[in-house]
Each structure stands twice: as structure tokens, then as C-alpha cells.
Image 1 (cartoon, rainbow, N blue to C red):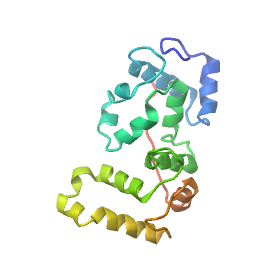
Image 2: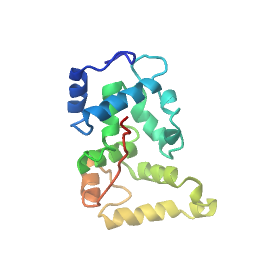
Image 3: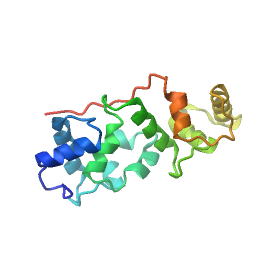
Length: 180
């Protein structure tokens, strides 16, 4: 399974299913494997950041640079685990954990006010004018949101804080895995 040119066995499929908490059906895993092999251009069994950027939807994502830190060098099993957060079968906790990792850019298990500001800037891109940036629109919006949730700009948030804030939000992040 490590070599992208090899075929998946039933055992491999079941192992991957277990690794991703059954977020995908066996047929979806086979489709994901085919896509993985297409992306793994050098047949090394891993997908590089450069190979991920060849996916147009990924390349234009405003958070692509943050996501690249999470995906660079994934093997197939890790690739499926990464995508499992987008499955309709993923739990809310799995989805929140994924979002937390996007915000936690240095991987230290804590999200700072600056981390949140950086994500907000990435997401809004050119939709916020320079003038709005200068007057601190990001800062004020984020401060207000944190205050409403019972936090301050000096708070270091951990995963359980994200779960507390987003746990009742009806959060929905899903992608469809095309099955031939």
C-alpha cells in the first residue's frame, strides 16, 4: 500500500477504513486511492505539497498554505485520514479537531489571538479594503466574537475550547467522493 503503483488488497481497504473511523465506504476508499495515485506523480507513495497544489480547488483555497503544512508528505492512509474530516460520516468532534489544526499553525496544541487573526486575514483576502484593515476591523470583529464566547484576546485556546464554542453550531463541512 505504501507504493502508489501497487494495488489495494481487501486487508488494506479495511485497515484504511479503520484508520479513518469508517468515514468512507470501501468503494470510496478505492476511488480515493485512484486519486491518490494520480496525485503521486513520482510514485513514491507520498504526496508532496507541490503535488497537492496541482489540485485546482486546493490551490485556490484561501487557507491552502496552512493546509499544505498539514498534508505535505502524507501516505495514502494519512491522506484518507486527512480527508475524513470532510466526510458526512465524520463526527462533529472530528470536524472541530480538523478546524483546530488549521488554526494551530505551529502545532503546539494552542491557538492564540494572532493565529485567529491570521486565519481571518487569509479567509477574507481582498474582500476587506486596506482602509478597513488599517482601522483594525479584523481585530475588533475577533475581539467581539471572543468576548461573546467568554474569552479575551489574551486567551490561549485549546481543542476543548473549540469544542465548547463550535459544539452546538451545526457545523457542516463535507465533500463528496465521486465513486465510479
